[in-house]
Amino acid sequence: MIVLLDTGVLIRLCNEQDPDFLGIGKAIEALVKGGHTLCIGLQNACEFWCVATRPKSSRDGLGWSLANVESRLSSIEKFATLLHDTSGVYQAWRDLVRVHGVSGKNVYDTRLVACMICHDVKHIFTLNPNDFKRFKEITVLTLQDLIGSPTMPERT
Image 1 (cartoon, rainbow, N blue to C red):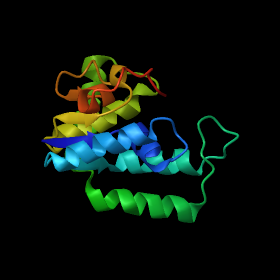
Image 2 (tube, rainbow, N blue to C red):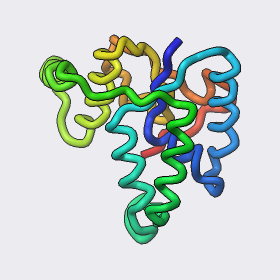
Image 3 (spheres, helix red, strand yellow):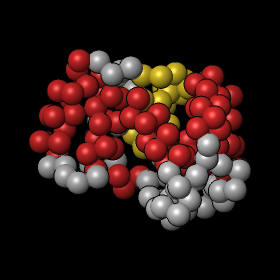
Image 4 (cartoon, rainbow, N blue to C red):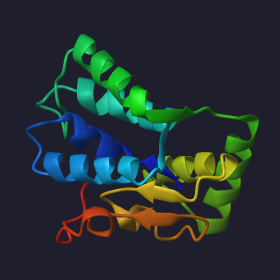
């Protein structure tokens, strides 16, 4: 199966100080060993860059240098295929936000789902399953699904 990695997963995979770092690493390893294809979208890369370069004094900012973020994103690109935006992503996103009545910050997650639909990706690995529960077009995978860890509180 092809699995899109949500941005929160990417952030925690690259942040050794995060309590979920080891669990995320084990889950990614299990997916790779299982022969699954991992991918990210442009939206993920942008969100990753934003959070990683945001000052620590800001909400959820990591305060990493540009060189550090560049290096970590390059590392992600070695094992996760980048799904390019296509002309269909915009229309799929427009259809999804209209059909599901999406508003506010949830439009960003909806854009990920639109990208998944256009690239025929059916699974997303996320720490925030509630962000995607409205979308019957995809299947959500959590840490518990992948490595059997206890249910973790939803992350933002």
